[in-house]
Amino acid sequence: MALIKFVANYNDLSTDNGFQFEFCCDRCGSGYQTSFQASATSLISGALSTASSIFGGILGGAAEVGDRVRSATWEKAHDEAFAKAVEEAKPYFKQCRRCGHWVDDVCWNQERGLCLDCAPDLEVESSAAQAAAAVEDAQETAREVKYVQKKKFERTVVATCPQCGATAGGGKFCAECGAPLAKEKHCTECGAKIKAGAKFCSECGAKQGGA
Image (cartoon, rainbow, N blue to C red):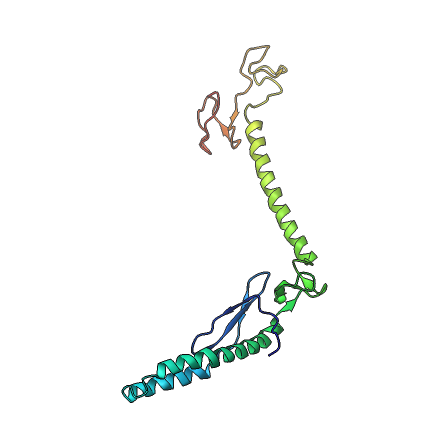
């Protein structure tokens, strides 16, 4: 029998009753099961065992004969069944000439004639890169918004005194009349308007510093 290629990526599902194999893609691991092939030797062994039972031990060596049949004939049948299974599975796989891996259509770049590990699909990679960039941008934006909100609303900045109209000058109280400049207060976490002196925000429940 000629040497059989395509033997590295398969699982042997054969039993004493017959032969079946599962061939898998070297890249993604998805696979195909070949058709079940009944074993003729299992019928011989079963017939011998039945005869031994019917004749009450006259064929006492039937089981031993069955083992000998399996060890020789079964192995030959197994090899032949495997060769047929290879031919059945081959149309579903292609071998990459660069890395030697056998892959299915999902992992094959038809345009380049190589597997996707050796020749990635640029459109797929671009789409994946865009999605990853969008996620990263969204996460960065979320971090920045949280930081800006927290810093932005730590203290309300007033340009003029609400009491006398004088220029505020950046302090907490008016330099002209002494009135408090910030009559309104905002949550340091969510920015909601809260009462002056409030210890917690009524909207988000965040504790207010300096309250």
